Amino acid sequence: MLELPEVEVLRKDLEKEVVGKRVKDVTVQTAGIVRPFHRNRPDFVKALEERKVVAARRRGRAIFLDLDGELTWVIDPGDNGSLHRETASEQLGPDTHLAVTFTIGGALHLSEAADQPTVVTGVVPTDGAFEAAGIPPDALDPLDDNPTWMEFGRFLAAAERPLKLVLTDPSLVAGIGPVYSDEILWEAGLRHDRSSASLSTQEVRRLYRATQEVIGAAMKAAGSPLDDSDVEPMIDDDGEVAEHLRVYGRDGLPCSRCRQPIKRTRIKKGVYTYHCEQCMI
Ligand SMILES: [Zn+2]
Image 1 (cartoon, rainbow, N blue to C red):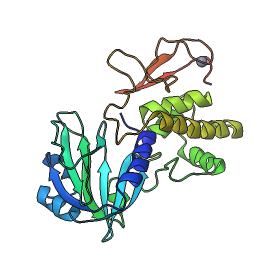
Image 2: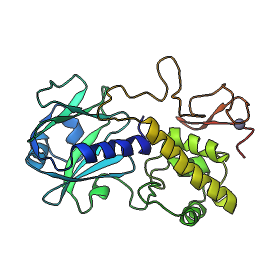
Image 3: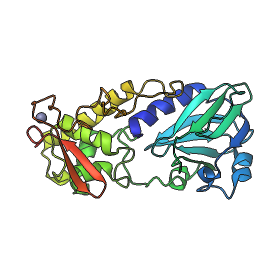
Image 4: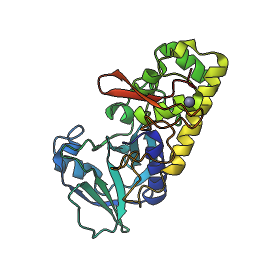
């Protein structure tokens, strides 16, 4: 599961490793990943080959690698996609859907272990790249937009919906999903079903600060995604929850603030929230 903090760390890695490099060869293993943007694989390969990467941006959980020629290489890592740095001669693994080599050496592999991969990628004109990638133009990206707490407060008042739904609705907030929405609300001590328009000034400031702190802590925990092929899962196969998470996946365990057991509550079909009934008001 990928949300804004993990993708921002990946963007920083790409800025260091890929910006300034020119694409040599492009191998698409799974045609479906380019289909939202291209008619077929050769169309994508032709658009990307020989282009130089000039900048690495992020919006929500999508990566935008700007190329020369006013084009942008969009990479949406989907639910579980990952990018790894490899040598140019490295064979493609069974879960690798795309390999891109560079003229001065090295390669990037885009992988996802899934029968139906959710990663998508394509080359689009830089002008309008966010829209082409399906990023709602009005959605707030809490890191990229860097709002002041007063702007954040006006945004919450206008949204006028339960906090959990505001934080996880991609048309309102870009890049925050089930995990960090719960973490942010726990950190702020605010209930998931409080209306975003009902917050006092103090509560707005608490939620604002919690958003920054949770994103910052998650970025520290994300390590170096381009090189670590085994990034720590949020919840591993033994049900062990990643150390930087305070409520997500911790139902039945004591709240680390008030010791009451954490609850898991169904909000709507397929959407749950982990929360503490005692210290989130
Ligand atoms: Zn508590």
